[in-house]
Image 1 (cartoon, helix red, strand yellow):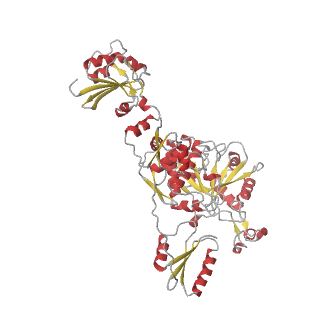
Image 2 (cartoon, chains in turn brown, purple):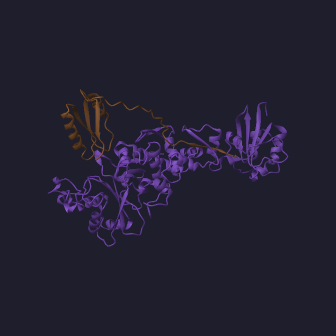
Length: 94
Length: 477
């Protein structure tokens, strides 16, 4: 005899929506690139150098920084980047 | 008896009083519409017409029978009167029949109904009632092993879990007065919505008893407080993980350990309350090692690290009181930690010597040259505490003296000093620095009576505005 049993799901039962990745732009001409320092060691050095190289190619850059690497970016920071820039480069780790 | 009225008697053979009232049931059957339910033996009572088998206990549960024998008078199917055990006067009032059981004693108490045997109430409510749980049902057939199903679905921390059956979850929810559907918060990293019910499901998985649930709920509330920075603590490459310290009368009530081996294994409440938080972060939050959890080495504390403070000395101010919780109340304090560094000092009998000794050990926390980086908890054992007690040093004095004793010249701490590239910025040269930021060193009493040693639980390096703050949360009901 096979008894049926039931378990209750301990998860949040989320069904995340899968979104397709946006296609990268054909060119950086006329676009503004956000350089986001998330607060990891030497991320600022990497981004400064990248900013110099992009500027040499005539690309407009804007620098941003998270208050701390340990917490998610404030919504206002994400909104500023979305409003003012077309692409973002993050320095994720040291 | 009038039309529409019926009598119901619920019995079990394994009850002397039920056997006693069999002749009374026969009397009632002669003069009224009578149904007799029998819980444990459909052949009992012999020779009586209309005996109904209640082996499933459905009728007993629906009639809310707690004692056998129980006599009920129903009017149009609704209960109008009830008598429990045997009491001639009550049975005559309920039934309206005089002269019942003339050979019986006037009264005799009954026995417990099988429908209220330990654990049975929840089984019957799940089977026949409308339990409040809304979590998705995962159905399976024996001989599939429920523990293996929990592993396959990724609900375990690596150790076996207790399968969260609806009966166990309902039993767990009886441990709190809170609404199962109340939202506690969003658990990082996925910000999964966490209800009281989800906490209960994970508390079952962890092996908690229902009376631990109010503690687990307070732990989850503290962990989700923005100041605790649970997202970052989970993500970090560092060793740190939540550490739970329980204060107040609830610790004794639920049998927590603050004594021998307080930081170790063997106590169910200590082990499972800490584990419940870890499993909740995994299951509701989606915090999986190798996924968002990027710990380089991790720590055994990521299974559980939870203990109670020793509050046996009335002169000692417990941690929760030091953090603003009124005396006599119960609370949890969450800090970060994982590495445990021992300080064995078996010779210091004076407070200054012990302080210098402990300070030397505290200074290695995280890295010997890092200051105002890692927080720590110093767990003072009874024998070390006695040294301070004899010197009349209280909590504030001990912390102040330890901070002073950890001070070092910046020249010893900067990068390159001592031939070690790691260190603090050059700007520290010419200044002196204590090991911990203000509020970065917590003091707790715990441990067995024997042993001149204390423990340092080293916390995460990201503290204060840029990381974590200890969070204290009062325990509710």
